[in-house]
Length: 539
Image 1 (cartoon, rainbow, N blue to C red):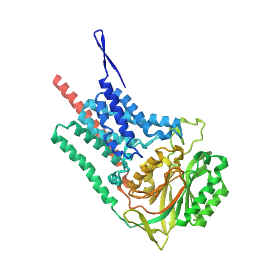
Image 2 (cartoon, rainbow, N blue to C red):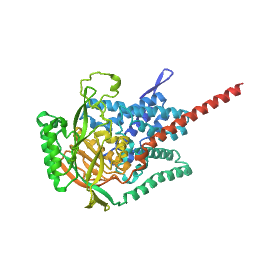
Image 3 (cartoon, one colour):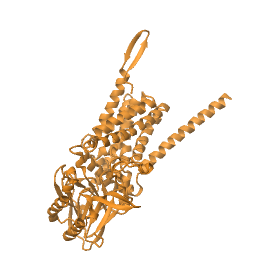
Image 4 (cartoon, rainbow, N blue to C red):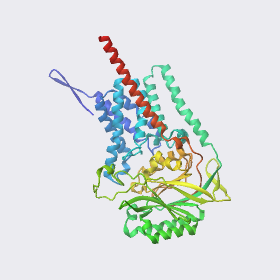
């Protein structure tokens, strides 16, 4: 970004800083709107204005200048929102910020190029462009969906209930439309007819989702449910991995679970790597947990590590194990999306057998759905909470899936469990690494989208918070505080139905991509027709 221009007039130099100050102002203003839109900030509505300064900014730049300016904006936004990575790993923080900022740069480049062709064309293409970019950010070796602008809206539940049809990308597109209409209103402020039209469209954008949301939130369905408990042990994450303390983890967790037994849970959840070693190779501990679940007549889900031999090589997985008194007492899920640069090296398949000096994790390839055989409850919502009445007479087969840590960011991954008939979802995580930052608050808020998209309850269990129960409408119950020891139980409803999103996935992102390609093809055809006409005239 050029911050200063010098203009020569004869032998005299004059300073022209006005345009450069405007660039700086628009960049900083856009960054502020982005940064203060994310949880735990209550100002999620700031995102409705976040792109407007960019519209003004990129009008004044060449595509090359816009790419650099967009990258700088991306660095500011990512640095401000993702600061919570620093306590865990400053190196990872730098990598994530530098890579995620490319999204802003690519958007700025394409959008500015479109502005040079035709301003109206660029503005109309904007919602499709940004939504498609967010769609692609969920794909590939460095996928990281944390900064989706949809996540700014989780405090406004009545406005996002329609994601059972569109997924979170529907909210992304909706936010872009709001920015576009507010920008149009400002530009048409002297034309009352056009401004009134924009105001009418803007009101519809809020009224229609809001009415639909109120209708959905007022539902009081009678469903079947199960009793679930979570255990948040609040163990120091560094101490937990020390060899001297590792064996004490089971004692701490089982003691807390003993206290939970008074509430008669069917399923008890322990957090990610609650057992921080290869549990299946420790026969004594394995047998203890098998017997513990059988004696208490519970299903017990715990995070652990799992080592298996694949093609003469020992692979290590971040895993979840389910213990029960069934004939097959131990079932396992392997995390399918290890965290880039921390749990895996991106594009490692192309790098061969290079030794990076770190024992990275392998990725699972199957969305394991666990099965529970138990008597379910009849569950009702009384307007403020769910409550269970009597149990069914016969045992039923209840299916559930679990995702580990940041896997809850990826709707298409979560959707795979529900496509396999999961009726609830658990999220196990260890957010203690991020200390007293915004990360635990943002993490559980993101899970709200997965609940509404699939109309399923979600139980998030963390080592040090935030743990809690999320119902199929995105309401959070019995949430823990961060860095507290806590256990809680709740009778939660099973999945309401298979939603449009569960069946068809991120069709909004695909449609946006098709529309963008169509725009480009039409522009190319238009240019070819123009060139052809010029040639004919010259002849």
